[in-house]
Image (tube, rainbow, N blue to C red):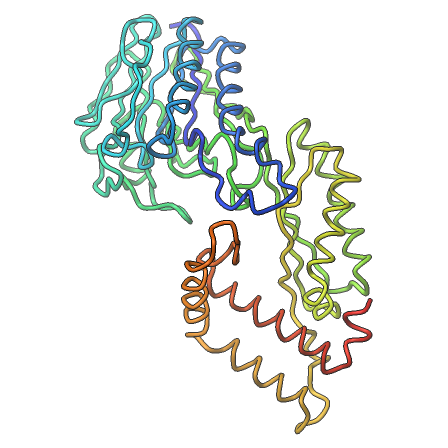
Length: 430
């Protein structure tokens, strides 16, 4: 066979809801809300521009059942563009768009050869493209929680063809991802396919064993929150006449999430913090090109600024936002500011064993060491949040990391009390 080219993508999560985004007054809500559509449009354009022979999507095309048919209609338009360009596309369902979840549907265009775009969920579906010398083996999720291994049901490779396995799987497991369709690299390798196109884990990476077929997670095509940082996109798989592959990553994202982590250990004033953020921003902007840069600033370290950072966190956040406006070239948004600093050990709160500062130190220490505190605080505030109007935001991180969140509350409260006990002049007034 002559050379062929496949575009491997996964985890598009079309129209994924961006919860809590509207609580930020200056958030580019519509720009971020449209990001998954714009990234999918970039995928379609790339496939056409690069004259790929086949597009495969390894699960989670959708983020769940549509809230409105415009979600499905947008994919119909993209699939039609590919069909009109003579490019077939094969899609398997994942845990977010499993067959029993999707109650809404629209007729999809057929592939150029008349075959359906969606692959079956009742059994492993094999599609053969004789003109390309490619056989694709894949199975959609029938239900959201496919906890059993699927690989054992995949057939033997078709002789003389390039065999591609399409699978939505946790593989050996990944942080923040449920263990669906588990398997091992050895199991995949033993199928003797030429390439495994995987989805579900949103971090791009290869997991093949020595002398085995490439086992590749393409990652998602668009980051959706601060835990999905860095460039996101797809893999172009070039296949030679011996069925050997060359894999090339292509970014597709239109909004890029990045964490700005600043060590405040040696900083003497908040001006040092603002300067460090400005320097970081200047380095990031050339790397993101014309994309929207969304960042969270996290300050850490044993710092002499610990109390001041907590006491003045809202004002410092406003100063950081001003920098994103003045230096961000209209393409930067600060999602939030987080303080993760600690009091310097030799600058403890103690001045007198019987004084209020020492008492406060003991109380704070006891609270931080209480293993049940985080659960109690989170439960109480969730109950309170349920009684508030929906437009009122209580805290955007309850449940994300209850323990860390409780520690932040303790640190902020103790910093405020320190300022009050010290007269609040030199700490809060600067």
